[in-house]
Amino acid sequence: MDKENSVFDFDNDPDFSANFSKNIEKVLSDAEDVKAEPEKIEITDIDVPEELVNSADEHQDTEEADTVEPSLEVVEDSKTEVEEDNTDIEDELSVINESLAQQISNEMNQESITVKKLLKKKRLFKIQSGILLTLLCLVGFAFFFGFTKPGNALLMRLGVNISGTIWGSMTNKFDDSTDVSEDVDYIDDDDLSSDAPEIDPSTIVWPDHPGYGRQEEGVYNILLLGEEAINMGDSRGHTDVLVIATLNTKDKSVKLTSLMRDTLVQIPGYQDNKLNSVYAKGGLDLLYETIAINFDLRIDGCVLVDFDNFEKIIDDIGGVELTLKQNEADYLNTTNYVSNPKYRTLVAGKQLMNGNQVLGYARVRKTSTITGKNNDYGRTDRHRAVLNAIFEKCKTMSKTDLLALMFKFLPMITTDINSKCFQSMLNSFIDNGMSTNTIEQLRIPADGAFQDNIKVRKMSVLVPDLEANIKILHSFIFGEEIVTGSAVQTDGGTNTGTGTNAE
Image (cartoon, rainbow, N blue to C red):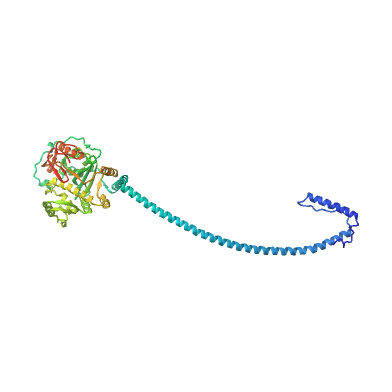
């Protein structure tokens, strides 16, 4: 309802105008004080005619009715439009998100492929660099070890250490049992067939030695034993081969000394008997003690090989070359010393012999050797000839072949030499420039320093002049001058007489 259509005359009522203005100012003042939550203002002081109030109420109702309905429709339309707009926006955003996700995925895949290629190239580069570096190191080590003295020394030292470890792990150890055999005399067919006269053993004068045995730094004495244990079962056999191998670093020499098996010796705790019976009676310790008492010599270690393994060793190295006289060849071809009949085909002269033939040759006593010796003298000569032939054969073999043979031979060896002792001896041999090109040889008892062709308790024995033999033996082993002595052999030759020096 507007002013023109109202029945009430607002302009001509002064009271209404004054009160209206007054109330308007109050409302504005109160609104200034209460902005956050305005209170409902009641206009009570205005005197409004009743017909005006009624007319105003009708006018208000009509306006509200006309205004509310269109407002709701507008709100609904606006809401629908907003929802449609939101849907369109969401669709657009979804499309954009999918596009961005696809693009990001493609970028990431491409980057992953690139990274993999880079990593592959990096790994390949590392492998190539590692191979190249390894090759350079190998070449450097090869040059260092092969062409420089420190390198050669280091390589040799490493080889010695490895050899010592192999030696200690693969060789057999002597039985530590202290079983003692009965003190009986071993009388063989040679003893029974001998017509030598008997002597009273109480008439033999034995030297008085403390039993420790002489020992010097830089001189190693290793006892090489060949055991004949045929039909002995688990019992120890007789040592028909007894050789002292000496490494003398002072004069850089390698020496072999044969001890004759029939030498009569003092045996602690037993009657005097043949040297080859000692090991069977009381083992290695008793043999060491016997050598110390009779020859005043300390043994540093022992290597034992039985006859069966000796034959195998000769075959494994391809046989050795030995020179036979006609009488030796005939004897071996007509006796069982060569146990396999098909190998009894030996001839006079130098020839290659296999294990079965060499073993038979080393055991012969009944015929003279190429050195002119017979009986046990000739047999000890043969022992040294066989050892020398083995050394010569091994010198012609490559290091690779020798290493392969070592793995084969070591399980056949029984020894009390541990790995550290073996390394020490091998180092001394190498450091002092020693070689087996020249091997000096000696036989004990020496010529002119013993009695033979006699018996003690029905046993054919050699009775040594021990004092004279000790001087000869020590001169040979330790390199000393002697006043008397004889029979020093070097490389198969023989020097005979008194007052000779060991060579």
